[in-house]
Length: 486
Ligand code: C2O
Ligand code: CU
Image 1 (cartoon, rainbow, N blue to C red):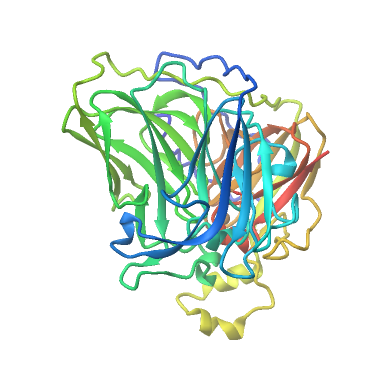
Image 2 (cartoon, rainbow, N blue to C red; image 1 turned 120 degrees about the vertical axis):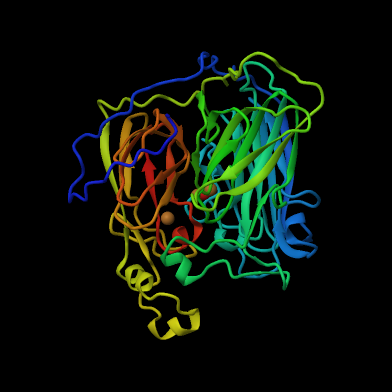
């Protein structure tokens, strides 16, 4: 099966492999991708986002109301929907309740102009409480995206400061339904009705701090109603700060049609890893009236978790065999790997990170005496991001010439998995020592322990662009850097 992770033993070699085996392209559905969506100039969509503490009783909070941080009143989260070619004009006002909470918005996965990318200090001054700023851009790509704060992300996103951004225009044929399924945990103490601390040293030095309540669209294992026997698009978004899921669908045929917003030629879903920050668009043939399929996370193989029940309703829509309509091909430029310059990115644990990871289950207070000549647990090419607040900018990890192709040769020398997110560009991932897939685009590359993986970009977007782990406690404890396209 294409989607099965292929576990080759990664040779723990000192240097990088000269070349990695490339997977074969195989498809199990008939139809190829459609032509790219024609980009017309459209309307301007205005939205006012006000970061604020709001008391919200999501169904998964079990009757409790929690002080969430959100961008809008009303339903959480806001969903912005544009047609391809539309301009988004957003205002952000920071009304967060604490004076130390700066704010900005990163439009995750959107290949936008650098000045609109929302990274504090690198491309804009962060917005102080009481201040506001504006973002304005025309997204060049169709698909499923999201946006989130890029300041103290671990707490601000942990409290809910995010929204969804969908750019329409990618279908070749209408589906029978189009549903958004937002996957995330909440760091809540359900009894006390409070948030747990979002950043823990223990979590930061290991796989991150997991939430206690798992939800889809703010509810535990909700029922999602779909037209019976319809071909239904499910847009899965993992906005969790920490958890890496492995999603699958039981009791319905399902195909992957897009990864991180980018159309992929449809292939059968067996299971697919979904790291924080990633999206997967599925098309499933919905169950018959009254029957139930399930969205399942099998990251823990012994204890798979049903995330949502997918229930068929009404008269059957389709009787033909399942051959899901593909989406339209993206406009992301195709890098030329052959002539590309190779850049090495090595992800490692710092000495402090190793020391903390070895300490076992001790409390923050007990750590205090050990604290902490070094609070950085992770490095990229030997360097940690030097400051939680980003104010002291280090030099770029690499300088790239505009419009040339580059191979990012990434190696994970840590015992943990890191979803490596790139800003302003999209990785074409094509070779790995530990995973096997048909080459495809991602903006967040799941890098397994010991893995070496090769992906490529055309450096067509000038500016300073972040590359960081999207396990947010790792990002906040050093695993972050940037490259410059001149
Ligand atoms: Cu979704 Cu730099 O992050
Ligand atoms: Cu990480």
